[in-house]
Image (tube, rainbow, N blue to C red; front, side, top):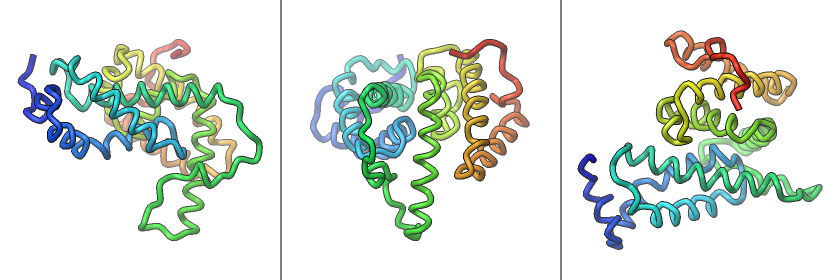
Length: 215
């Protein structure tokens, strides 16, 4: 077991200053991962808060066998996935105000750019919601949150080959859906360009996965 970061060790002892420091250090990471998993939602802050509660509760179980950020991302991802499951099973009211689904404002964008960005995000996550949970999770962590495949494997507790296979089929399904959505033509081109760069580096490109349905 590796020596623990003094801040993490103090937080495990329940020291209030260390717990505040942990929150300040990882707040943006927690929000980023939660947002990528659940998408534009009015519940983002609530999910992040729930994730931090679970992080504090689970801190005694962390023993330094993985990077703390990987362990933390696993906790956040699991909380966010539970939120997505609840939302999928909840009846949706027709005519719900779309403004409730908007992403957090970007102060550098003009109002019309912000509205267009929110529309693309809503459209993207509608397509992501059509994927199975396992495929959706690896895709948002890897392609949208920028987490390496090996770390995604630790987060979802699956072999790297399984993660790559799920990612292959998730991309295949998502790209087919995006190709039929005029709102997301630019996003599709960007994702395919990222995929092409990755294949050029010998990564998890869509043409190199093993056979099978990927779960």
